[in-house]
Image (tube, rainbow over all chains, first blue to last red; front, side, top):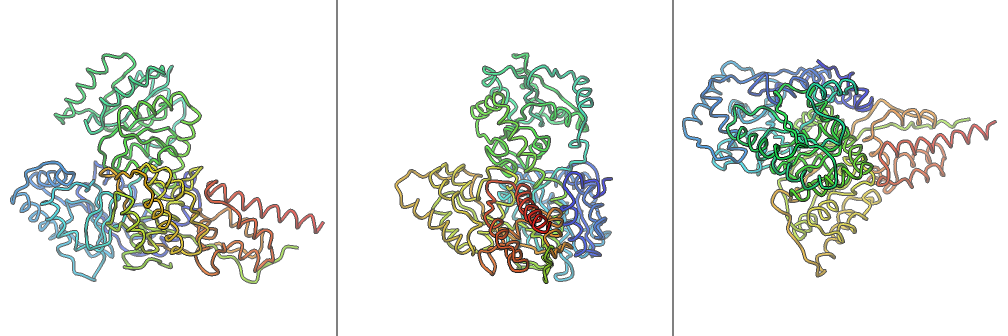
Length: 407
Length: 225
């Protein structure tokens, strides 16, 4: 487990000093995080790192998980999809299972911490037992709420309104609510396998093992084989740009065996890729963090041509490696890329192709974008910034309605 | 002989939490309407806070309004005019807001073709909650100042150099005020006051200030020799 001190060479002493000063103001405060899983998924991954760091700063930080059976998980999976704007059949039974499971959890949980920090919709309803004024409650929504199913949101909103504050990852995810809504984007951990520094020999060895040739420029998209990531559009854009370049394209994604639509997309991508020997398709298991890290570092240009996106942290991962990135202007991506300053934002296959050609043929400009992008991520999208924002949020909920808080 | 101040310079950090107001607009008329009634901390968020968040970029996109007008509404003419409004030279957020609003209002009176932002690309109004955090760093003379300057955070630098101009004495940065008032260093104070946040990163700015202080210390050493 990483200690705060290990981040010093990356973020600098001043950042650690600010965190410690904030920690002093919050020393002894108890914070209880609650989510729906201890392992797997982005929320568990970030809590695994944030909770120990909060403890190191002097907070009494805990983490609890709501337990539920298959029916609860099936219902909340439907909730998740519907909040993302997908069509789902949610009936009275789903709501009843949700309520009943949370009641069972409440019987065994102690929610008396100074700050109760609930993550995502699954445990949101725990707030029903809150006694106003006794402690502070925060709801952290990690998902894209820009197009939620109205009826489901109507149900959840009744709970969300009982919190002191809620947190969203992007401005477009915010809702009409009578409580304070705070913007805290997610972050990447620069010390994780996916992002840590790598020696050239390590990168070479991994690329050799994966049989990825290095003799020509490499254009890469790392993402699930999902139509919303537009892998077929990536291939088209690459083919158009290839007229002026000798680059290769690599599409790297996870295996899609359990996702019928993903398998279909992968099969079409493979079919299209067969038409061109310069296009490679690589399926890797979800634990291939070092492999993804090496591939990103070996790439010349990285694409993330999403047509819809939650936050799109693969963009921050690529920028952190100093790579020039061309990405769709959707979801949280415009927060990570300032067009023509720290990367390129596009809206079409043609635009992606145009900029790909530019970056492949203007390496100095591409390098400048990559350098600026890395610096932008360093300032705004590393885990230490997210930790700082959470500490500020804890102080803000203790001082409601104030625009200037003197510590 | 290096002069010691009676009152030390105490470095503070300025930290900010972003609050979503739930208000958004997709066109220029809406932007003007919201901006005219915007509280100070909304103006701060989209100008000073934006500048801090993008301080690593050179040249730096100057404020959120200019960036959105240029890249989403594709109005380069107005974008250019809004970019030229230097947030750090206003001594009140109200005056800054009025200058931004007047520029947009003039553009709306023109005859140019206007487009609406596509869905998902609207301008979202946000508000800053600011935190003032005293650090453990104090300086009584220029040598100590130089040492502490190299230790404090970039947000501290921004606070003392640019945001300081928003509070009394208006229009003056904290460093220049201390140099002049406590140490009698008028020229150094004026040189620091001329530094531009838009054409260099905050790290670059730190190096420039450190360079100015070092030069002054060398000058003192030469004079004493």
